[in-house]
Image (cartoon, rainbow, N blue to C red):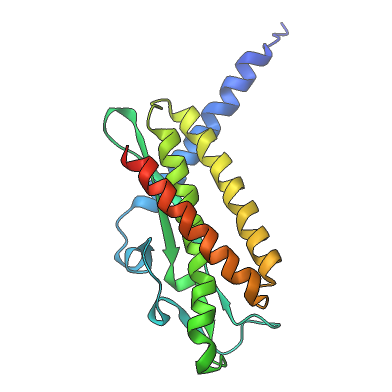
Length: 186
């Protein structure tokens, strides 16, 4: 006897599988592995010590930041997101001229600031959400927004080479962070 399954049943199964995968990833991330925890910092001002120093980043790169957003379920089914910086996956070249270190770190700081900005926007969206599927959708949308903004930032500043545009981005992101701070406090 051939049974036909409705598209709704199949879609529900796929959503459940995706949910389990996301929960597995979330649980894996939040496990208390002290090495991993020591290498992750939440949003703050970056310093030279926050980067792994390596001899060659390949090509003309002198630094690279690995930032991201993590989120977890908290009481009453609500979610909260946090901007993170992974020290062991963020690099700065040992060949970098000392006089340029602060400037390069300020460029990398804006990458972290952009991550914080998108995280704050996500937390505003999370305020009234208790459904994990809706939270996952908002999270994925925020990751796409984050990636788009990070790529645009590097493109417009030519990876920090365009000093004038770099300074415009610094001012713009600082202003957006101030505005979002006021929105999140309401």
